[in-house]
Image 1: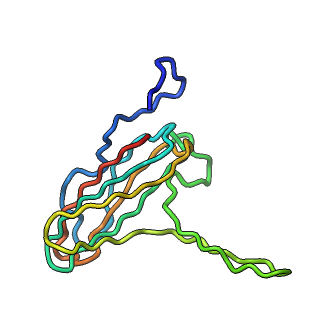
Image 2: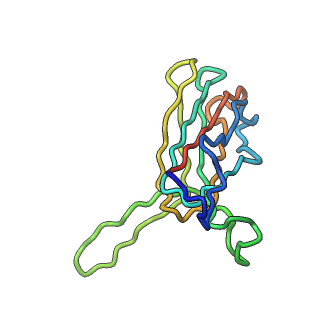
Image 3: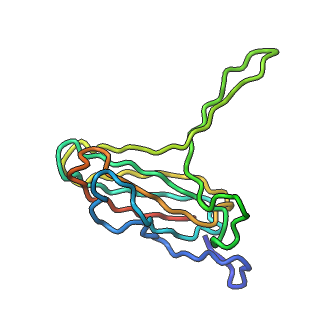
Length: 157
């Protein structure tokens, strides 16, 4: 995406964005305490690439993408959350003359590799120019006594 020199809304990021350097996940299945955040101003789409190497048989990891509609914490309205977690939506059944009930829950995704080698996968996300910042937290969820290595790269367009 080419941004004009006089763009009143600069991006604040340069691709590729490293959201997590390659390192062992926290011990005992704890979520990353301070996930790296990046601006995502004016991005329509986000492509994440996760590269995971298990440390032991049964190794797996959970990931959860978080979004912020605010460019800095100081602009968050009183009582509002600075970060929104990814969610899963399931629509309810539709029947004539009856209201439907849909459900939304916070979501995280689990990846378990097939081999002891480093394995990766892409994860595309639509941002539609409304998300100011992103971050992705992760945790070992397979063999929590032997956390694997995880690296996260993002490309924003």
